[in-house]
Image 1 (cartoon, helix red, strand yellow):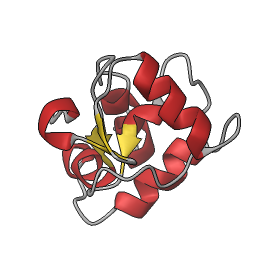
Image 2 (cartoon, rainbow, N blue to C red):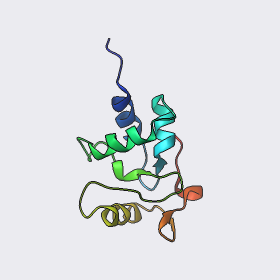
Image 3 (cartoon, helix red, strand yellow):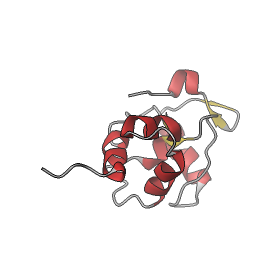
Length: 103
């Protein structure tokens, strides 16, 4: 049986993030097996082949900032989707204390 690549593990873990919650790029990298690969997680989210199966909008910076979104109108689309899902914000950042998810 072929071992999963880092990117495949990233997509698998990201697909588990529930509605109304977010995970940081760093935490996702750690759970996928390389705690120093948060940028690689960002690239995986940017190249996400299936937004229906992998909710890349639920991945945010360690500060709760919305650092990028490759779809729609970018960050404003990401924020709108997260708010509709019930994610709480403090100003422009996600309130990680209430909306963060660590798997």
